[in-house]
Length: 264
Image 1 (cartoon, rainbow, N blue to C red):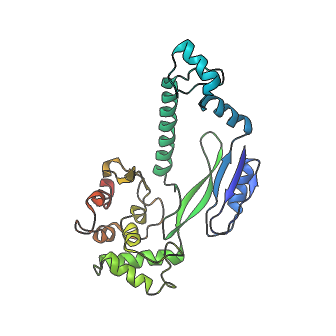
Image 2 (spheres, helix red, strand yellow):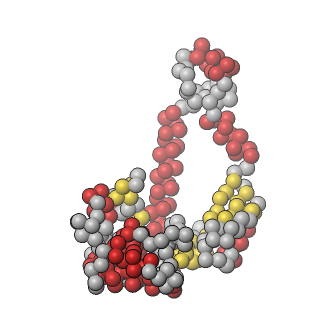
């Protein structure tokens, strides 16, 4: 299985034949960005997938299956014309989805970062050993000295001075050198400021599943860690005071702007 690494910051694109070698190279990579890993399965794995999930040729296999078994057009069959059992595929999909979600929940509750770090932090990769003795790389959040100061200033303007998101964005854009934007090519926007103000991770907690299909999920369905799994940038009181009121949030986003019950 081939593993490819890609760094969005410096364009680093190495390719490794072994996953362990790719992990070691990612740990030695000195850059502000975090390399993204992509695994490429071997050719025989892709061949097996094509055999069991490809549509058969209507002129050959499909006509024969229809004559014998009454298979409807467009049904998935294997290379020999045998119909795939949908119940088995559905059960396999449900089981793999359950295992993937459980793995994500365990990582979040243990305090590890999933995905790109939020503005104000950087991802520090550490090596841990699980109970089975396997060594794995995990990411934890550590403050970025330059952008963390911007996050603290945003909360001061919001909690102590009561400024709106648009006014804060205008102040940040007035000095882009001191207040670098989340996207280097774009300016600060009110939406970007709101995203920072409503992010629970700045209180030292990890949180996951705040949205479902792009919509805010109820707080009781959030997956959160214990407090202080990483260094906080704001305290709980300041975070609560900075949260937008009902008139500043769209109705569909009102559920995602508060701390979970365990953090109150």
